[in-house]
Image 1 (cartoon, one colour):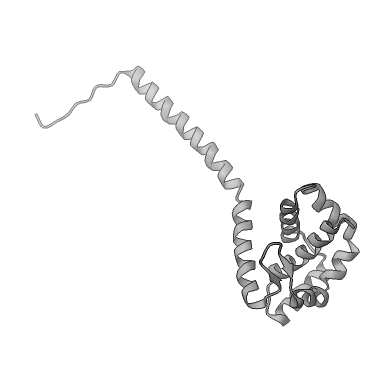
Image 2 (cartoon, rainbow, N blue to C red; image 1 turned 180 degrees about the vertical axis):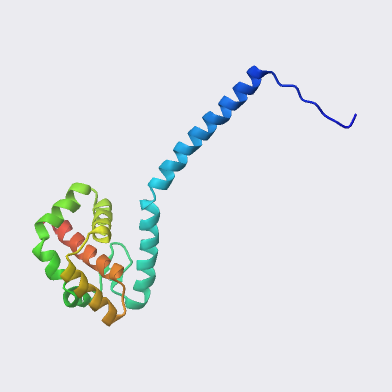
Length: 158
């Protein structure tokens, strides 16, 4: 009398097994979408790192709207980002404006996203890394400075 016996009909067992498989399939689809779309998390972490790096460098003011400081404008010139952006101005402006044509905040976010992910040519990338090393800043912070400059150009509607 120490045993417990549970009797399950085969219809109930198949229904339970089918339900478990359906739930697993649904959960797998949801988790797959979560795994493949973590760009928002990458952007959030990069944003935090740039803001933390800017605390000591003070290359841009964080008030609204974000603007370059004197040190930021100097870094923009010395790093070569200004001439790089000016040389590719038309193409870069088109990319930013098509991403967010009428919304100023979204245009700023588009410029930030563009510069965070944009691959630079090898020669310019080496120059930027060398400048970042010499000044003790990160390339992500310099990219943000370039993005702010590009956003300012886009907002002027040049």
